[in-house]
Image (cartoon, rainbow, N blue to C red; front, top):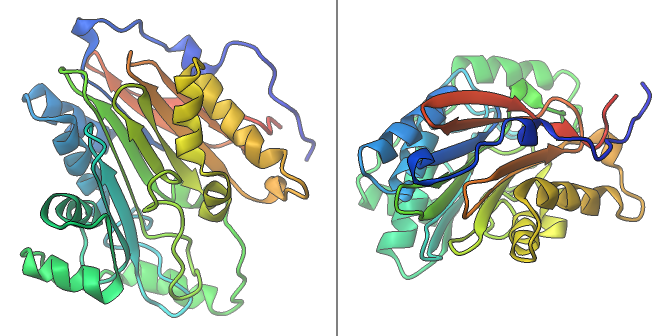
Length: 313
């Protein structure tokens, strides 16, 4: 397969851009084709709830989707058969909460919010996060479904440990929202790399890597191979690029190229995708490989937008 490099032609996002005014708020965007999640988030804001409420409720839709095999219950396990979840959430005030290496609690995004609002900490991990969840009334449940167990048993026959590009059409749910008051919040939730080493944590629960929000500027969220996102602090980078005057689309493109242009980059063999939203409600998305997409709900329209990519053929 040959490689092509995307040119400066009008992007798919730019072609579907809507000029923002007060009549086009709220706006919600999310990684991948997750129309049920964006619908829930948008309707939450239509009911005069905050962007933070929208993020939590929207992400919960995918966490409860057992068929997704990437988030919450039914997520693909680590190489030892354990489903472990990572999530973070960030509000318009700059407060944030995170849970990592979480077992037995389906709604990691909700627990991350509890960490943010009900503890003096930003991040809780493992048994500590799980115990805190039970103290907050979360229910213990087995997150390994029969379908995910079957897939794990099939994987064990070869135990090949490579990143799978665009696995199951999505591997992390990242969401950004701006409500009718102009306040931005974001969240990210995942079961992590399929068949990862036990204890592995990716970028998704790390503020600045998997997610970053600055209410005066905008927000960004990542999906794909988390190790590469962490190395470039991708979401923070995108927000800072928007602070410098770049559009969300251009900022996502620069952040992807920061990964691609690293010395000895192995970028042809993995995927990273970013989405971004600025204070005006403009959006952007970009990825290394083809196949990434963003869902946007705005002005009563819930659409999936195919992302442009660095590798185009």
